[in-house]
Figure 1 (tube, helix red, strand yellow):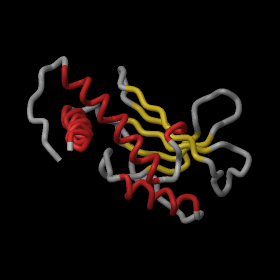
Figure 2 (cartoon, helix red, strand yellow):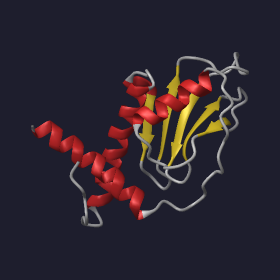
Figure 3 (cartoon, helix red, strand yellow):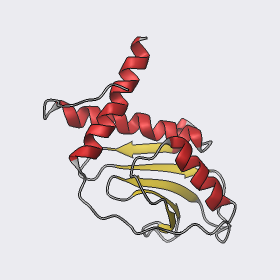
Figure 4 (cartoon, helix red, strand yellow):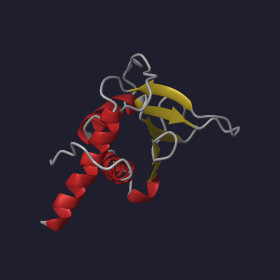
Length: 147
C-alpha cells in the first residue's frame, strides 16, 4: 500500500474521508453486511455505522450495529428503542483501525455469546496518524482502480 507521507492540508482530510469510506466498506463486507448497511462521515468527529442483520445474545428484541469512532475504534451496540444513544455491549481493544478480518473474527465471538472484554475505552483526540492511515486507504483504492 502506498504511504501518504505529507499532503496538502486541504487534500489530506479529503483523502482521509475517501479512505474511511473504503475502510468501512471493507469491514462491512467482512462481517457480511451489504454496502447499503454501511454509513460513515468525516466531519468534526469521524465515525462509521454498520447495521447488522443478526441480533445479539441477551438482546434478541433490539437491532444491533457495529460503530466506529477515530477515538475509540470499533464497538458493538444495540438500539435502545427510545431514541437515546446506542448501548455499547462490547468494544474491540487495541488498534483503532484493525484489519477487516480482525473485526469480523471479533464480531463472530461477540455473536456467539463468548465473553469479550471491553478493553479500556480510548478517549484521545483524532490523531494525525489516524488521518494519514485513512488517507492511505484512499491511496490503495486509487492504485487498485488504476491497475
